[in-house]
Image (cartoon, rainbow, N blue to C red; front, side, top):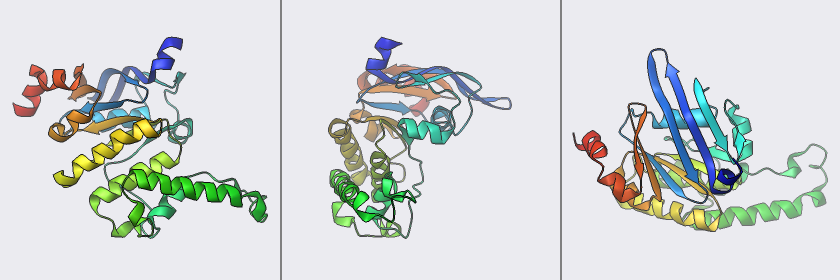
Amino acid sequence: MTNEKSEYILITENLTKRFGGLIAVNNVSIKVKRNSLTMLMGPNGAGKSTFVNTCTGVLKPDGGKVIFDGVDITGWPPHKVYRAGFVRTFQIPAPFQKLTVLENVLASMSHSGESPIRAPIRPLWIKEEEEKVERAFEILKNVGLEDHWDVEAFRLGGGQLKMLEVSRALATGAKLIALDEPIGGVDPAYAGNILTYVSNLRKKWDVTFLLIEHRIDIALPFADYVYVMDRGKLIAEGLPDEVANNPKVIEIYIG
């Protein structure tokens, strides 16, 4: 596992999740390279979100393993997976609606000033707070939200909310961010902007993205490597061009 730890940040081995008689994730094995934008695609109901939920502890697996950053995290609770640096976003963004964009990002950062012992002693944490604000503004600049820093979250458009979710994930210091349909419900004209921001972020912030999508026409060109699921099973993998021309993939999308 030593060599794979240096190259791959996430490995699943025969991951399986059942709901009664339904096998939603059926022996799925993938490898996500560090600093890559790896795409997990498939039609609605393919099992993509269930797969991510099982990896991140939202659901308990019924079989297989999840290896993150060289550590077996199979069955870990969500908060422990999150603290390890594996963070996910959801299809429906859920920010603090009445907080501003900046406040939402800052709320995602840990702060020693929150300690009941340190909180009353301002000199102990003021420098750290200034650094957090600077980092938050840098994140917002890199996702196109710097001009909206003082806007309350409920006033943002759909695409902007998606980028706020990405910003909050980055603010945690995540090593791997799973984006669950980041362009779902977003105007196609803005969807490409979102994926361009994400592609640039992995290079600048030393972070890996696992992109869960079904809109292959927009998302596929941005991926480094692609896995395809259908009815719980992995049916194809490869470079974007290889997957786009795979007969099995063409069949499930075109019929």
